Image 1 (cartoon, rainbow, N blue to C red):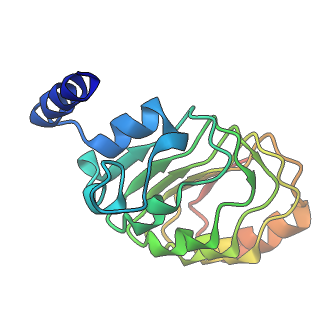
Image 2 (image 1 turned 30 degrees about the horizontal axis):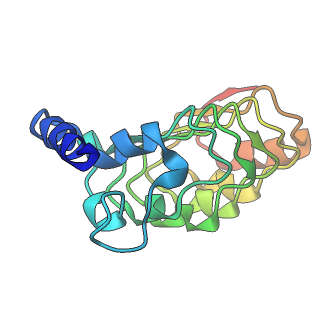
Length: 174
C-alpha cells in the first residue's frame, strides 16, 4: 500500500514539473541509491534536473554524492549548509557547464585544484568553511565574476597569486 501512495506522489510531482533527484535528495540524501538504472535516484533518471540546477543545500551531506558528477549539463550546484569535509571530489572537473557553485557554510578544509578547470564558472562561494590554503588553479577561472571566501583562514599569499591571474573585474569577498 505504501508503494502505491509513493507512486501516486511521484507521478503527481513529475506531472507538476518537479524532478525526482531534487525531491529525493531533499528528503533522504543518504538513501538515494545510484546502483542500478531501475532505481529512482540513479544517474540515468537524474541526467536533467529542472533548469540545470541542483539544490543539495541543508542535507547534512558529508561528501558530494557521486551521481552529481555525471550531471554534465548542470549550470548551478548548491552544496551550502551541509557538513562537507576535506575537499570536494576532483570529479567536479566533469561539470564543464557549471556557472554557479555554492559550497558555503560547510566544514571543508581544502579546495580541489580541478575547480580551476571549470571555465564557465561565474560565481564561486566558499565562504564560512575551514579553508587554510587555496589552489593557484583558481586563477584560471577567466569568467569568474564573484569569488566569496569570507569566513575562512586562507593564506593571503595564495589569494594574492590567484588574484594576479584573475580578471580585474572579479569581485572578491574576503
